[in-house]
Length: 314
Image (cartoon, rainbow, N blue to C red; front, side):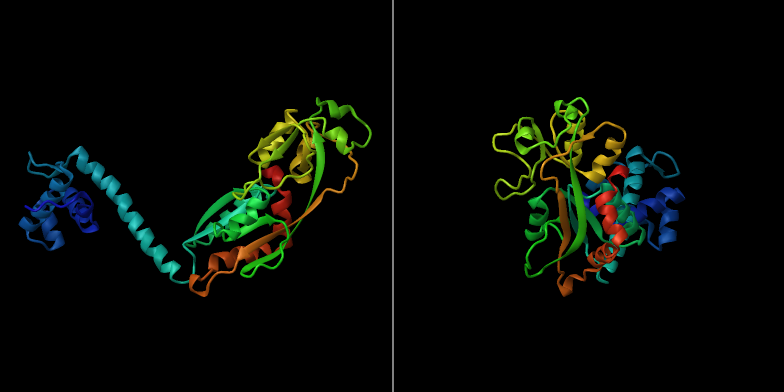
């Protein structure tokens, strides 16, 4: 008997044979149902057993009973069959213009709650496209799009026209200088100068760019610095009094309301950041229906505002 390798032995047809034998309790009954000669069915089952080097059926009694290994094969095999069916359906849908994968780069200022709500609405459509989210910061958000690592970037600074890259306004975000109530600066009443703020450790979110040092904002030369990976880490560090810095007002507002953060006036207080969303125009052959779905949602002013202001629900 020529031995199959395990992968070829686990074909949908072979799994169907084993399921029939287990369900009907005998090789002969399974062969009748499948329209096979009993010896041919027995041969196929033994091929699978030889390939896996296990016994799938206990043949010590008149009724064919699954061994523990056989029962596990049927359980796991059903998952394989279900996945094959799902792949077949996904391929059919992709052929209608849905991308296999859509990657979205979201800057640190984007509200996760709204982003996940959009994902829920997208999946509710029953589309075959898989979503991949990338957490980026500052210039790294746009860089992910420019390097082809993302199809859509949320929260990028306005950029000059760049060929196949398109952009549209997302909105504005106000930043406030906030400290923990037990921080030394919490007791001040005057507008803080840059020099005064520079005397204390600042908390900054690391730029996720892979090209050089990246961008920094509102930092004085020589200022002590705690660098963290995300805006949520920055918020937590400032709540603990580990440092000071500017936070998006929508993110900080619930903690300001409860007294866990104190907003301090500063000189040159205009800290409003205008951000865009940008995307790479898909090729005609790629379909682009998933990207168009997201772009259609982003045309809603309510959705754009929620992406910048819905932090308290994250």
